[in-house]
Image (cartoon, rainbow, N blue to C red; front, side):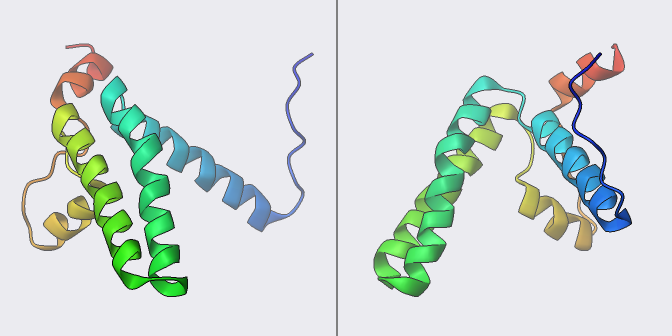
Amino acid sequence: MEDTPPTPNFPIARRTLRFAKRARLNWLERHQHQFNFAIHLLGIPLAISGVILLFLVDWYWGASLFVLGYLFQWCGHLVEGNDVGEWIVIKKALGLQTVAISPKYNAVKNGD
């Protein structure tokens, strides 16, 4: 018998769990390169800390940490070969071509 958590009876909770699972799988699919994955583990907390510092403590340190964290994440996506998530939304709105998943990992997924 598997140790699976019980599914909540509330429709909103079920939808939230499904959304969280899809979001996690999407994130893992877009961050397959080891460097990209690792640098995000550093860049995301830095960017979030920067936003908190920006509003609560000091705008200079907050902005610096946010930019540094975002720069780390951008470098990770540059190494992996795909677009940063926020840029995908902007590029789609402008009708530009996007790369959500790196072609080398997309080829492995499709069996090419």
